[in-house]
Amino acid sequence: MFTKACEYGIRACLIVAQYSLNETRISLKEIAKLVDSPEAFTAKILQKLVKSKILYSIQGPQGGFGMTPENIKNTTLERIVYAIDGDSSYTACVLGLKDCSDTNPCPAHKKYKFIKAEFLEMIHKTTVDEMVNDIENGLAFLKNNTGC
Image 1 (tube, rainbow, N blue to C red):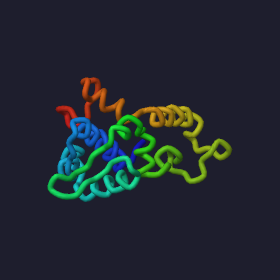
Image 2: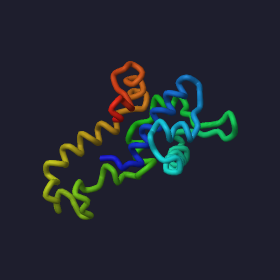
Image 3: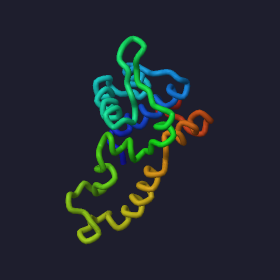
Image 4: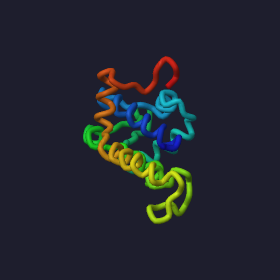
């Protein structure tokens, strides 16, 4: 459902939020390694997140990326997805057709529109804070022994 850039961006936000909760910033190099993404690609994603004021960055030896407590608490998945991909991740046709709609549906439209509605509700309501709390409480993870 998400582009690779979005997947990396969401994971990066969660990692930056975890560091920020410990009042620490994290470098691009460390984020790329933890997200398992090429550094140059990660840099482009992080630039979009900074430009959208989801993350902040400080240059220099003591610099890195951080997230304010307000952004940790209030940033939704929808905001992250929009910052990276615009609304194409959740408005596009599941089969990639340009003119898919209720009046001009693709073969999967009728069934997928209900899944899409639940997906939209989930990304609209789910916050970084909620996800980080689940990670911190052992209810969720970003990486396990199988590499997932």
